[in-house]
Amino acid sequence: QIKGFVFDLDGVITDTSLYHTKAWRQLAEKLGVTWTKTLEDGLKGISRMDSLEMILKAGNKENDYTQDEKVALATEKNTNYVNAIHQMTPANILPGIKAFLDDLRANGYLIALASASKNGPTVLKQLELTDYFPKIVDPATLSKGKPDPEIYVKGAEALDLDPTQCIGVEDAAAGIQAINGANETSIGIGDPDTLSAADIHFNDTSEMTLANIAKAMA
Ligand code: G6P
Ligand code: MG
Image (cartoon, rainbow, N blue to C red; front, side):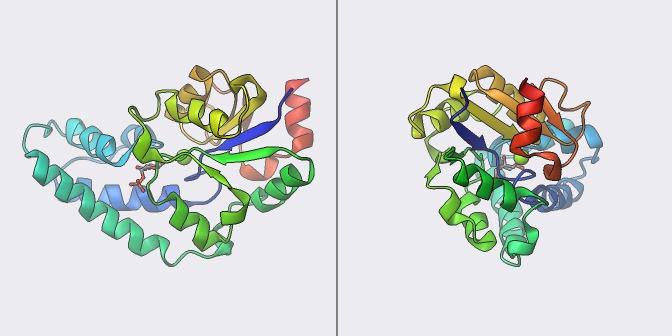
């Protein structure tokens, strides 16, 4: 029986995946790395430094920078990203998400956040959703990022639930892999081809309701 929901943030609760993409693309093009849809999708859910490595690798440039230079490049991307999120308001919550969170609360489900983003708490504050997420897995405590299951295992632990009692919600292939590896039920929101490994698929956040989930699990 499902008792809790563990949420990804970027691309699920809000449209920040667009801002991450924009900031990474700007950096990639400055470094002479060709931007592709495969690279864009592959970056979703991936930690800041792992994302940078993925971009450099795509351009065969992973050996062109020292570790200090890499940290500086990642910081440059983050500065642009942070500037973008400071303009966010509750209007940036994706369709149906607020109602879904209210419904989960009303029905006694526990809620946790499992975002790889160190900016997660800031984003929740901008969206005025902080109160909905009493449990947040701190990405700084992870030994491995998504697609490793660790973050979703820790999400279930934070709720005092067995993973099998949890549903994880993601927009990224790496995230679905992490949820499945943690033994939780996975919901994938977005491109059905990218998210083919999800137990339940919705095209859009507005389709994610308790009724639709119950139907999909029946
Ligand atoms: C999420 C996003 C990624 C982002 C990562 C780290 O997983 O989907 O696009 O790279 O968080 O975010 P941060 O805000 O810590 O750089
Ligand atoms: Mg995401």
